[in-house]
Image (cartoon, helix red, strand yellow):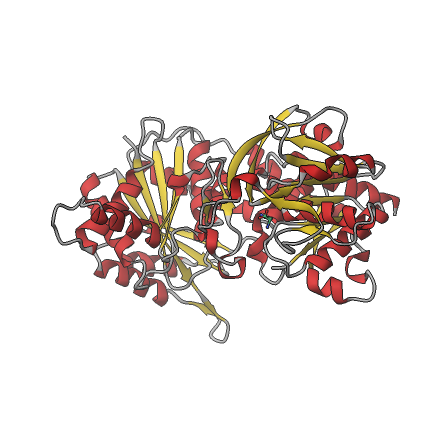
Length: 536
Ligand code: GLN
């Protein structure tokens, strides 16, 4: 029988609920349990696929093609969990299921209501990961206790907890214990009030995890235990970590959070072995000796979350190459407007990430031209690959009007064009080429060397692709196609010959990078950047 842990948040948003839940999953997995994770997002969009990265941060794509919240990236990176369509539900998705059923006559003349119909649908979503192969599901409830939007989710998990019987479910409340600088004191009142809000709707947290800047003293822990109905040993401190988010599970393990959870759920506490993880964190802390600078030239640069998985994947590659990565976040439009290349002049490697729409394209093309001509290691991802092809067509093949039909429908040289399968699609939301597809790599290229494999699987999220009509011309001048779909039809990776390391891919390698298993392309890209750095 699958047991359930629900993680709610209190006082403020951005407490790191996703990282905390992911850390927990990581620890439980390292105690030998099979763990699944999911996130409930209280907004009305059916999924984040249609939202601007400025609104929502990156859209994380799973193997099965779900467009999801970026917290799922933490789940996969920390716990090596494979997320799926069942790992992210929104209010919009829950309501649309219920409304569709109502339209089909599924409620037999009944009045359809938040309780029980919406809450039943939420409980179904919670139970959707139950299976004999899954010991524990961790469900993170988005939003903050007290939000109107998240009420149906909280009501549903209250019912679920009650119905699942003793020791089968657990509530964890992540809260803020702020430090008031003027008073030089840390304060427990906001947490007491947040637990009060939950208690009003019938939820009493079993465990309190307190995000804090300063160490908590016994008096604070006693106070929280007293006011919140939690035993003292279940008030856990989660202090800000110094070097890396990957320290969080280690800190939580020191307080035996995982062990306490297993006891509450009446699960056998097997041995915890996180030596590899600790070694990895040690490397992060101690690899300050050498540094490389990687410029990421994008259009959502002001929001760090917009390129979350890319920055993480760079860090993973840094850990593996024993270097600290200094990420230069370059706004493509600023680079375009600049007279010179000072914004990227220091970069030992240049990365152009994915994106949509034409804002920032000239700046990205400028960065790619610079990388190509100055032999700076380059990694292009999705739109970054499409831009690399456009830049090559314009400046090497001499087709000044070469473009993607995403930006110029009537381009005389549409080197990037809408995929055939996309031509009849008008609906937005979940309609791109999404999720994992195989890709074949001929031997003897930088890409094949990186992967050390001839067939790989990578995740996609795009509508446009390399236009096969230009294959011969592009390849003849040195931009080689070094990865295709198994039928040879779709270009998945291109690579520049005669350049130290210039690789661009149509898929998103960043989604599959893990701190203990950096992604091969990121790893080799950073290695090439390090080589250049040393030469300089
Ligand atoms: N806008 C491009 C496309 O739809 C690239 C997408 C992306 O970078 N994810 O094909």
